[in-house]
Length: 150
Image 1 (tube, rainbow, N blue to C red):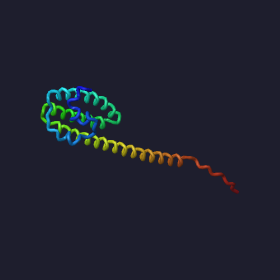
Image 2: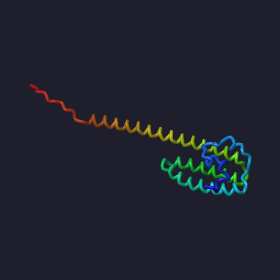
Image 3: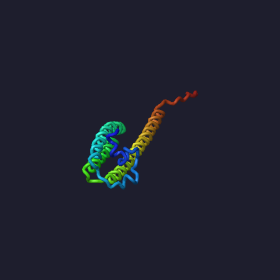
Image 4: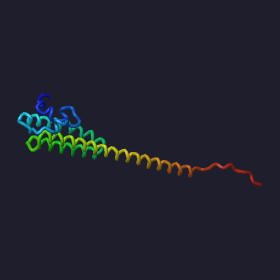
């Protein structure tokens, strides 16, 4: 998308990177008019994409959706600060990298907790089934052949 060209090499995700490069985090420039126009378009696209992603995270659970939504709000606040000239592109890139790492860590923690809860549920279910099987066995009549008595 040509509208994003003025900021393409200054924003890690637009450059196809998971984390910013050293050149990005040391960029001391502030957004000029062309870059501000590109930032507005970028923000529009990010919010549109985030609205769909929050639905997907919501399928995993409300805590996933909340963590993602919080990250989107922080990211948007950083784009606003960049747009207003309050921070440089380098500061924005650094904060973006930190926020990406934080979101990944949060999602990993949530997933670890979800897996632990699932394992605990399996153990509880197995214990419950084991107890039920024991009760059923105890309540079954036992066949004992009759012996002749004189």
